[in-house]
Amino acid sequence: MDHLTSSLLPKIQVEQITFWENEDDLNTLCETLEAAIIAGYHCKWTKPPPRHLIETYFKGVILVPDKLLFIARLDGNIVGICEITTPPKQKDSALIAVTVDIFAIAPYALKIGIENRLISKMEHTVSQLGFPIINVTFDETQKRSLQFFIQNEYVHWATHPYYQKIDGQILKGLMLYKSFLNTSSSSS
Image (cartoon, rainbow, N blue to C red; front, side):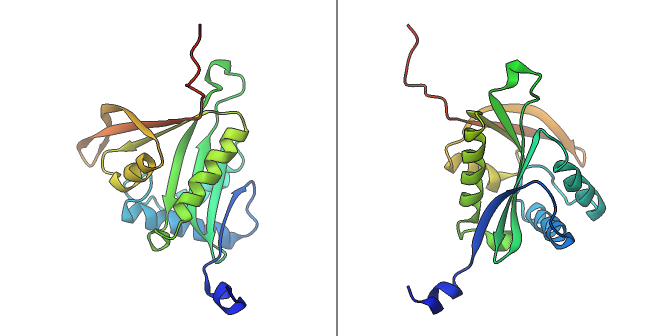
């Protein structure tokens, strides 16, 4: 591959962030989330909340010790978001699993590998932190996200028949997990 060809390829970066370097990043993160919600490629909201609430939410996320925030960039702009909650350290019985709170990809950034790189980075990081289980829940309308997680070896283990009520309609909740535990060894 020559220099000209490589400079034309999109540059994809995935990273965990712990502070906001600039206001532009927060703005593009908000735009990404809004676009993903409208397109149905996320796992939290059914319609975009007001912008100031999104900004406040993500300013807070990076301050919470039990939260991890991963972003994916395409040519420098944020186009993917993954937020994880780790269990509180004082709750010994829960130290096995993390929960995916938000996984969102801007629709124009789909199908070029960004979503796969983002989920891989998240899975690698939580595994390195010692959490062998990842949980995620979707409402039944989030079919794209559900399909993506199932394709990435997440197991649909339960359906909550009364997960949430939106615009007067009761929606089911679909609960998935992925395990990195070694289940091949049996106890004697």
